Image 1 (cartoon, rainbow, N blue to C red):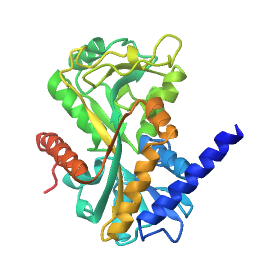
Image 2 (cartoon, rainbow, N blue to C red):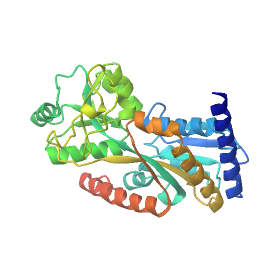
Image 3 (tube, rainbow, N blue to C red):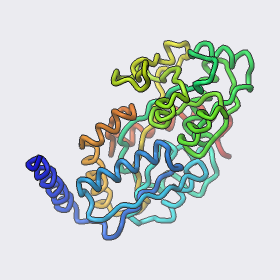
Image 4 (cartoon, rainbow, N blue to C red):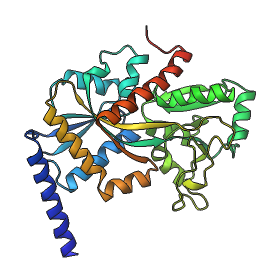
Length: 331
C-alpha cells in the first residue's frame, strides 16, 4: 500500500511538472468552474467530478471553486463567460446548449463568445415513468399518450433544450403530443417525476439513477442503437443492460446523445487553451473518470480541435431541423 501511495504521489508530481513544462501559461488565482445548470443535474455532477480528480492528482497549481449559473436554460452561465472575456481562469461546463441556445432564445451571448476546450463524454437518454405508473413498457405508454394527446406531462431539463428537442422528435415519429414541463436541470426533473408531478421524463442515466435505486421511477427504453452495457443490477431485478432500446419498442429513433462540453471565454491566450485541453485529457485518462462514466452510463469520447469542431457542426445542423419544425428559431 505504501508503494502504491508513493506511485500516485510521484505520478501527480510528474503530471503537474509536465503541464508546467508544456505551457508558459499557468493559473495565478483560484479557477472558477461555472456550471450552466442547477445543483444535482448531470452538468453539475460532471463539473464536480472533474474538480475532485484535478484535486486528487494535484493537476492544478490553484484551487478550484464550482458555481452554478443555470438560469435561462443555462444562458446565465454563458452570459457570465461573455462578461469574462479574456479571463482564462473561468472554465464553463455545459452541453450542446452552448451553441444551440442562441438559435431559440434572444440572449446577449453567441457561440463566438466562447472558446472550445473539449467534449469529454456523450450522455445517453432514456424514457422514464414514475414507478406508480400503470405503464410497464413503452408501447403501452405511447398508446395511451396517442389516445389522449396533451394530457400526459413530460418533464425535462429546461425549455427548448435537449430534453424538449428529444420530446419533439418522439412526438414526430410516434404521432403523440405531451404537455412539456421544463425544470431548471435534470435533477429537478427527476425529483418531480419521482413525486408524481409529471408522468415521464427523458433524463440521462446519471440524473435518474438515485430515484431508480429508490424504486421511485422506472426506465422504459433507451435511445441507442444497442442496449446499454451489461453490469451490476441497479435494482433487485434489473440493470442498465436489461432496458430495451426505444427502436425495439417501436419509436423510430436510432440514437440521441448529448455532449458534455468544456469552454473558456473568448479572447483567452492560446497557451491557456492548451493548458486546459491537456488538463481535461489527463482527467479523462484517470481510473476515477472511467469509473464515473461507467457508473453514470455515459459513452466516453474525448474530442478537441478539428474533431470537436466537426461534431459541433453536425449536431448543430441536426438540432436546427427540429427547431425549424417547432418554430423555435428566434427572429
